[in-house]
Image 1 (cartoon, rainbow, N blue to C red):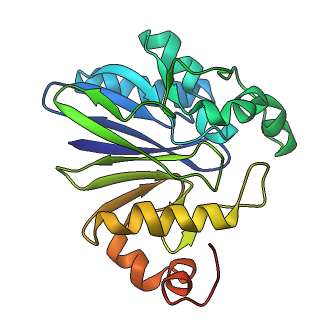
Image 2 (cartoon, rainbow, N blue to C red; image 1 turned 30 degrees about the vertical axis):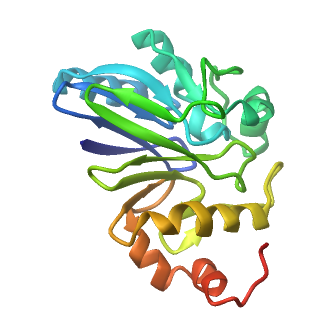
Image 3 (cartoon, one colour; image 1 turned 135 degrees about the vertical axis):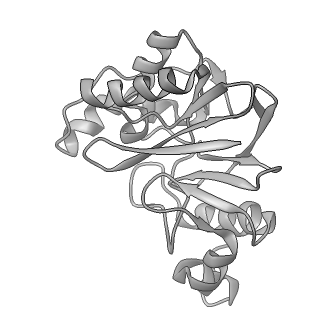
Length: 222
């Protein structure tokens, strides 16, 4: 599986394109928020000869959905996200303005509900949908086992974790998701987070202070 990262919008959000030898692709967390960023994404898709089949989201925060409507309309593809984040989707424009970001047209409903969908398919590739509530109620991560690639959204970052002080956030749920659903995938798995640089589960098990203190029993998150 091929993966390329774009850093979009004022919150420096990571948007990913993933594709395989069939040249079918998915756009993960489309955060493109300007005409220039739209062109950057679509020009790359055209240059590589890719065919998008879905816009897929790890969660519903505004900085991760600002480009979803563009992708849906440009390529006539469905939007896949958890309906448990429906309230966040509906309030996307308002939340953007709260952060001083000019809102774009954003989706308010999902076409493919990841709360009841186990797998997203494109070409010969399957992304396993793993629920990881905590940063948001409907947060998920997307795991491709052959390449050992994991798109973690804002659940797990390099040496940090997602915020839980925003509406719908829950620290105990987040840590339970990380330790119960992400860490067991294996040290060699590469994580592609929603902000910042990529890492591995092994690195986070050793150097992520939030993960280390939980693994060592220094905090009670259950």
